[in-house]
Image 1 (tube, helix red, strand yellow):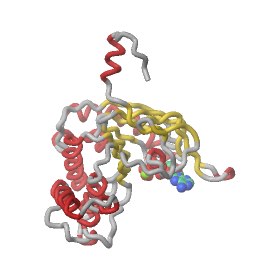
Image 2 (tube, helix red, strand yellow):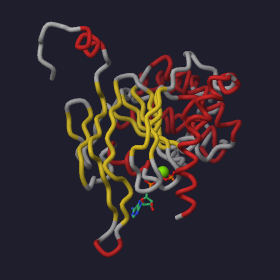
Image 3 (cartoon, protein in one colour):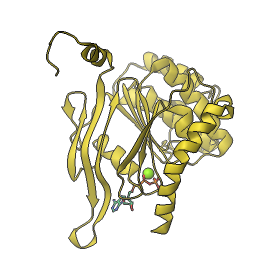
Length: 279
Ligand SMILES: Nc1ncnc2c1ncn2[C@@H]1O[C@H](COP(=O)(O)OP(=O)(O)OP(=O)(O)O)[C@@H](O)[C@H]1O
Ligand SMILES: [Mg+2]
């Protein structure tokens, strides 16, 4: 912690900054045994502050999921440190402040939409009526009214992903880790999901670390983009995304500011896509 020296302009500005929620320092990950090792992540450091929406952007295979899984405590790290608030992240320990939305659609096929969304609350032992009220409101927020009793097989991919999103959000996590949650969706459905997520996030302002390889998606949603290099993932750049909020996922893409920042970051990202292809 900083000392309480009389405040200079610089130190008072520091005091006003939102606190750091996720702190990653010197993080590395090497998979495999000695003879066939793959270094997926190499010496990555970054911080995410309270209420920030940070996109972790990089080409396929650069180690994005690996980083997110280590932040979630799902995967052991090879070197470095990860803290969430004051606590070191330890593999295998559940942190109730953290919610995770996976890269693949992970709804339970044998449960209805409402039973999927209410799953975490059920495990937490919330009484039935309170659970029902929360689930009903989540179904409405997700635009799934009328589908509560449906099973996942009766839904489109986008609807299933809404169920997965609400199943995590209903637990009211302060910190949200998302791994390409809309990666498998077509462009139109993806835009619909962006609208839903922007609506929710602009209201709730969770601290978000969102993994993607889609620059348009990162620019639409985030307040900051951390760019990773091709494998092994290293921190390449850090861009502020200052577009005004609330944002409209469709009209934002038609603005000159969006086009300008897209082009600027694309040069840097494009280099990494080419390096990935060349491997
Ligand atoms: N369990 C594992 N064992 C060995 N290597 C792995 C394992 N998981 C991932 N890797 C390797 O680590 C590298 C990074 O993988 P990771 O899944 O983190 O990439 P990613 O950036 O999330 O890619 P994508 O955008 O395609 O999801 C890849 O080269 C991958 O082959
Ligand atoms: Mg991945």
